[in-house]
Image 1 (cartoon, rainbow, N blue to C red):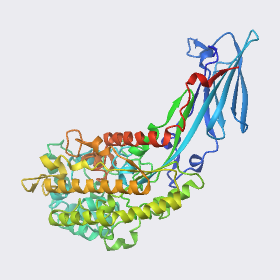
Image 2 (image 1 turned 30 degrees about the horizontal axis):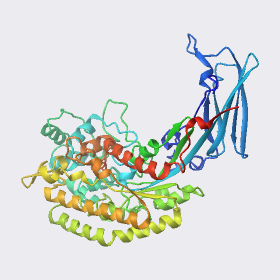
Image 3 (image 1 turned 135 degrees about the horizontal axis):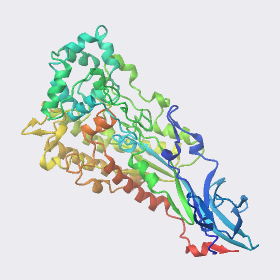
Image 4 (image 1 turned 180 degrees about the vertical axis):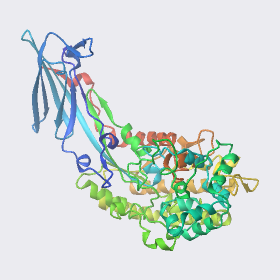
Length: 563
């Protein structure tokens, strides 16, 4: 190859975050992203540059007169174009109609009448990867744009547990009630988001919230100050509205004009581009002199999803969490037409076939979702033990049947080339098994660490949940073997030693969730470090099972031909 005809080819990433591929207003991926009609190649004839002038503009080699590019794909496509002498002639962009193998030729016309030419084979591949699943797959706890709370809200987050704040408020807010005037119940109801915040406060319906506030006696501000003093935090005043506290991340009084709520790819699903699944899609994109692998990535994961309520059908909230006034609001996926993820994916893809379907689901089927009133995490004592015993029976008896129905739906409605399913990082409570719980999880000498406590997770509870996790991963692996799915492991090992109470946890804390996304739904989910582990585990398997070329290319020199 002549020194003047060396060139490179690059292809822009197809990660949806880069291309703004998701339409937030209409809650869907843009059709032109899902099934593109054109792919862009960026061509650079670097070797005709002779440096830069004093203003940083390229200097073209004085022997060069013009250049010509030819891009061919067998008999189906051919495009030629020339570039005359200019400071930008060394770079250009061309659009090709499809992935595949192209012959790219650069011809340099010299001022002395001579020509120099070289051709290189370049292979472009674009794989469609689809992710279905629950909060682990959606990136719960890791919003794309973390919230910036007001100082008052930061103080409340510093208190860590909403139950502790509520305990300190029991004698507090008569003045607040008087200030609301008429229709107190309706005003409280309007200030409380539907998902999670009521459940995480341990209050099951609007009537109980109303009764709770009516029983208070001291001012809200004084109660918050007491909490801050208890935690040796900064003395902060100015909490104005109880409703704004419940909706942390979207209200409060402050001089900071940059305050904002958390931002998500899809806010109704708490779906983030920062999930390990999304990061893996970006990680496996590769580029070299001789080709590029690009990933079209579509995630339909929704926090709180189960196999039945989430994948096969829409999610629902247990009406007991909402009170009798909300019995008609159990379905919460109206934003997507009350479709399950499989139907949403099918409608989105139209005729394009999935190359790799990644599934992460089943933990919520066993009673860990915040969308149910009898969540294992929110119950305590004998009730928790009863639920854990019932969960073990579900794993053995019911979960295999749910996987059967999932497999049938995946095959008949999506028909992907390959299906992958992940294990769960089940060691979230491992340190508690030996050293006891910490923070909002904790009990000490049989009593909660924080006031009235919240989760009151004992060493016995932690061991029991660890056992359930191992049994769950075992059933997931059995399903993978039975249906020919590829099992993605390594997560348990990667998270080992980094549970919620570890020195370097890979899970979101209560305070972090409160601060970064304005609620407590993110706690106990993988944090950024945890999603990096998830990314690496998924990417490793995708490279092996999906991206490995069908046949190994010869040495690159054989793909460069002089003409």
